[in-house]
Amino acid sequence: MLGQLEQGRVLLSRYRMRNTALLSPLRRIPPELLDEIFWWTIESSRRSALNYGKFDMIIPWVLTWVSSRWRAVALASPSLWSLVVLDYSSKTQNTLSPSLFPFVEAQIQRAQKLSIHFFGCHEIDSGPQIQMFELLSRHASRWVELSVGITAGMIALIAALRDRLMSLRRLWMQWEGPESQIGESIDCFRGASSLVDVSVFNEYRFMLTPHPTHQLTRYQLDATWETHKAILKLAPNLIEARIEINTTFDQPEFPSAADSEEILRLSLRRLYLSDSDFLGSLRLPLLEGLALWVGNNNNPTVLRHLESILGRSACPLRSLCLRESPNTRATTEILRRFPLITELAIMIDDPEAQEQVNVLMAALIVSEMGLAVAPQLRCLRFGCEDETSIDYETYLQMLQSRWKSEECALITAALLIDLGPRPKRATRRGLHALRLEGLDFVLAKGPNGRNDMHVWAYAPTWN
Image (cartoon, rainbow, N blue to C red):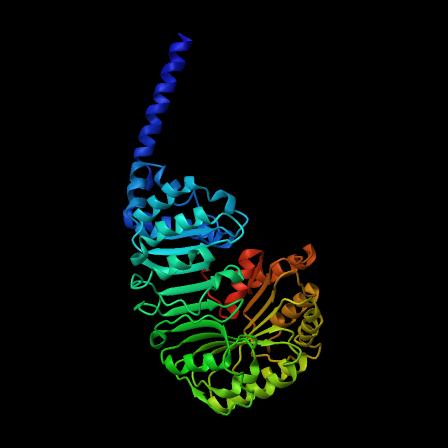
C-alpha cells in the first residue's frame, strides 16, 4: 500500500509540474519581448568571442534547446546569428577543426546580415583556413562588417571579393606576416557602395587599398602625412579619424612639421593624431574630442600646437586624451587655458611614463585650502596598457578630493587595467565607497578594460 501511495504521489507531482509549466509567465511573454531578452543575453557572449577569437558553440545555440517556442523565436531572429568569429592566430585556434564547418554553415543560413571577424595565421596549416574563408566568401553579398587578418594564402580569395561587397559598411584589415603583403595594392573594396568605416593596419609596409573615400564617415590608417592629406581632402563627410603617421614607409618624401598648407574639415568631430606637430595643418571648427600621442619628445610643443588649432579653429573641444607620457605642467596649463575641456583621459603603455602620470595625479588633488586644478573636469579616466600600472593610492586620493570638493564638477571616473596589477584591497574598498556615494565609476581589468581603453583613442570597438 505504501508503494502504491508513493507511485501516486510521483504521478501527481509530475502532473503538477506540467500544469505549472503551462501557467508559467514565460509562456505569456510576447515573441518580440522574448527576442529582445535573447539579444541582451548574448551581448556578453559576443564580447567574449571578440576578445578571445573563439567561435561560440553555446550561445545562441543553447536558446534553441530549451523549448520548441524558444527555438522558434531564436530561429526567427536573424540578428542573433549574425556574428561569426574565427581567429586562427589566437590561443583557441586548436578548437577550429574541420568539424566546425557544419555549425558555421548553419549559423550563416540562419543569419540575414553577417559580421565576419576572420584572422588567419601563417604559422599553421593554411588548408582549413582557406576552406573556411571560402565558405564565408560564398555569402559576401550579406557581409555588413569585415574584420580580417590576411595571410599569403588568402590573397587570391580577397581579390575575388571584388564587386560582391555591396552591403559592406565597416572594414578592418591587417596582414599576418610580411610575406602576406604581396603586390602593390588590394583593389576589391573600391566598389563597396555602402562602405563608410575603413581601418587599415599596414604593419610591414604601405599597401594601397582603394576604397570609396568620398563617402567615408570614419577612417583609420598608418601612412605618411601626404597620404592622410589626400584622404582628408577627398572625404567631406568624415566625422572621426584615427591618423597614424608612419615615417618609415617608402612613399613620397615626408614633409616637415612646418607644412603651411591648411586643410579645412568642417565635419570632423573626433580625431586621434600620432604626432601633434601636424595639428598646425588642420582647421577643425566642429572638433569635440581629440586624442594625441605625447612621447617625451613631443611634450614641450603639445601646448603650443593645441593653442594653435583651438585658436585658429574656435572648435568646441570637450574631450582630451593623452597617450604615453603626458607632461604635468603642460597638461595642467592646457586644462587651465581651455576650460571647455571637461573630459580628460590618460593612457600609458611604457613603465617610464608611470612617474609622470603619478605626478599629474598628485597635481590634480584638491589642496587643503580647497584650491583645485581644472575644477571643470567632469570625467577623469586613467588606463594602463600592457603591464604598466600607476600609484593607485594617489589615484584614489585624487578622486576622493575632487568628489568631496564643492568646487569640482567630477561625476564620472574610470580605471582600466590590461595586464598590470590591480589595486590593493583597501584601495578597492575606497573606490567602491565612492561608487556607493554616487560617483559613476568603472574599474575593469583584462580584455574588457583594454578594449574600452582603446575607445578613448577612437580605435574601432568591434575588432
